[in-house]
Image (cartoon, rainbow, N blue to C red; front, side):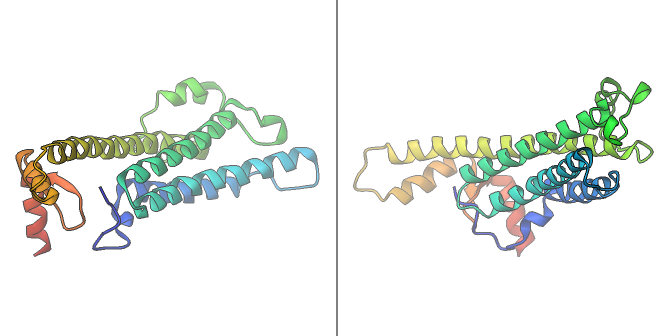
Length: 215
């Protein structure tokens, strides 16, 4: 199933997962900009590298959502969401290290006591408490994005499974005198689905609603 024939070339900006990734990138940049001032000591260089890697990870989460959305197939879209999930996991792990105090001797404060990692893991990511330490807020944003990215990926995988079943049914009839496209449309209809102008398959009721919106 293709995913590139969108009426709005910037439709990815309407995705909740994109908006959340954009917010997280901004929050991460703000956090890393307040790391201890850089000097030529090995400790400062370590923190500089950490800040750079965290910023790169946050950027990668968002950019892979965009690139996946622009790709030619649902399969590729899923793959790029996987890249986003990987970058998001890496950023969350960096937050965990900071919270645990791994970089405390280098001047980067950890979150001990009540805000230790075990306590942070139990905090809800929604609604986000703005009173929490910045690194804790960033970690919770990572947890939220992990849930959203997985949910979107699972949704796309389900569409691929449905599409594969329909194609096998349509082209495996043995009726060579019939056009494959006719069999495909019949199979889609029998599954209670409709094919939208952009090639996506949707439940018939939902597709009809979408058509009315576009009128």
